[in-house]
Image (cartoon, rainbow, N blue to C red; front, side, top):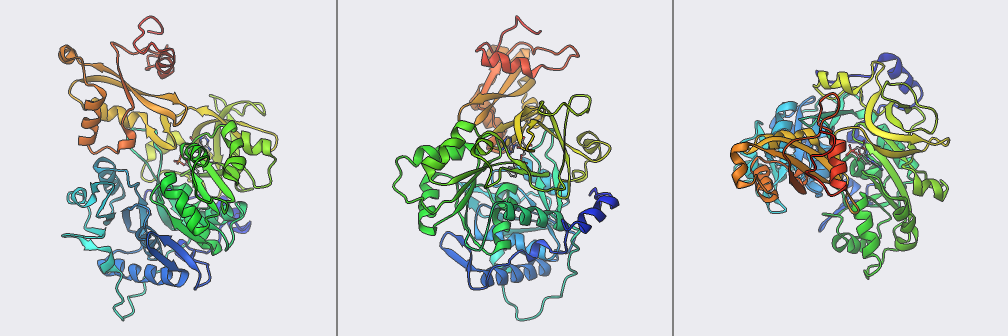
Length: 540
Ligand code: OOB
């Protein structure tokens, strides 16, 4: 596939020889007993046999539409059976799903369709009050497939029909093909696509299922978006399928929705981001649901404070596992038998013996053991390049193929990593990643805004919230410049996902600069922390 950076042949040979990469395809992950429950979604309960059949028939439906091996299809579905069926159907015919989040809007989805040159777009009819069909009308794709009332488009249900005839057998994908595209959190003006091959992602989910102790008795509750790597394959939905357990889809992580499902389905594992974990810690003290089935709570996506991690066993009655992962690949897990100290205070250690880790200073030299530096990594399930992004790749990877994570970490003698901060220009808002540059570019399109700088503001619940510092054009000054509400309306009008909206807006006359003339975001953050956002006295 053009635009995809393969692993060099010596590493490919090694990963195969050492058994990291096998021949299993993403379409073959359903390994449960045919009669056992694979998926519970709303009122639907599907056995492994039923899910397998639906995935096969829908695969045939996509073939009838003309979707073929190597094609890309943007998929934007909430946590419904349709997501699982569509994902399995597409990977079976070798068409790569491009996994948009339900929160994405026109600006993100259109860009993904263009970048991936997607042949089709699959969405819900409406969800959370948003009509995906009206957005779909102007997307640059040949086919729109809708789960539900499709109006002028193709209904997903119409792809799932048994025509009685054998569909033309498509060429089976190769394990080295790109199986799925994940979205990067983004540090530049535009989001990036992460190609994951069948063999690297199958390894990712199988090795994760092993480390996390998944078995056929695992009942995994999905509360994060199924399209997110954590919920999909760490070990996630696919890791459960590969070990024969049951996946239960919840619409969100709200205790009102998740707790009754834990009780009813006797859920044993759930993956959450820190704000949800903290919500659950509070809610568990007054809720009446029986959460006793819960054996493991995986927490990741953003740093989980040691003190809160320590509360989990007593309050929720289950073990806690910290997960420091990234859609780009590398996954760190605290192990189920790690001493309490490591589970509470670290973000885990690499999943694979073949994961290579370097912690480096600004010059790219390894720091002394135990000191903080930027985490670089390469390995059997970490990308070697973003899709169709040669210039960005030149900056994001070292010449010998290590991915620069932009995360600042400290490595303990045990190999466990402690996340100490971030170097990349990104805000981590409770696990949702916001590229400062992307948001700044949207803000700069506002007629009254002359310049914009977006920084993270520490927040006890979300970890960080988003603050936009704005310099207003002189002509707009008499009106005082746009307030937060106007900025949000403006961004909504541009089709930007709501999680990227700033939580706070500060108007300033100029920005503090670093000695080389760049905007000093450190100084802006320090001013916010000190309660003097428009301080002109320092650093200018
Ligand atoms: C997960 O994936 P992404 O791609 O949304 O975000 C990756 C970034 C990391 O580079 C790091 O900056 C941050 O999110 N992060 C954490 C963290 N887990 C992720 N920072 C501190 N502590 C943690 N535990 O977020 C993701 C992917 C797979 C599994 C889990 C999380």
